[in-house]
Amino acid sequence: MDKNELIKLATDARKLSYSPYSNFKVGAAVLCKNGEVFVGSNVENAAYGLCMCAERNALYNAMMHGMKKDDFVMFAVIADTDAPCSPCGSCRQVLDELYPAEAPIYMANLKGDVKETNNKELLPFSFGKDDLE
Image (cartoon, rainbow, N blue to C red; front, side, top):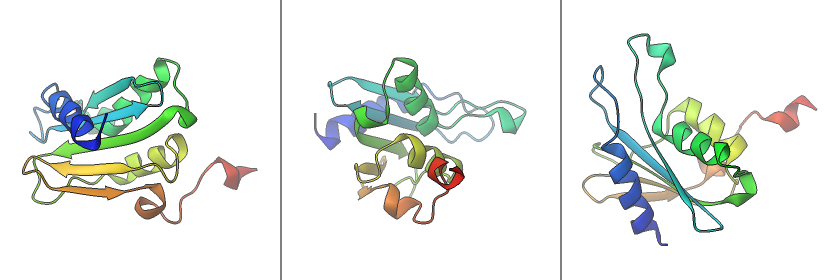
């Protein structure tokens, strides 16, 4: 699977978004070494603190199916934005802990713009479990 196929799956996941408050639909997909792909979309709630981003839904979906950090090889996130969609701060922290540091993260928009990055670039001074030991 290449990045364009993964972005397409994230685009399809975006259609499942439940976002009646912001009307900001986001989709995400994570590819695993074994070829499995897990997707997520954002899910909102009237109590905004209970909302869940697409990126975290995709990663948590994979983990609930037995995947671990070392299983992930490629990640994509997409939304209807002017520039490629970037993960929020909470998602960056979760990606930093659960997704490999150097593995590619593709940020995309519906116009076809794509930017490749990774955790080191997204969250250069991250806080993680190693800091607690």
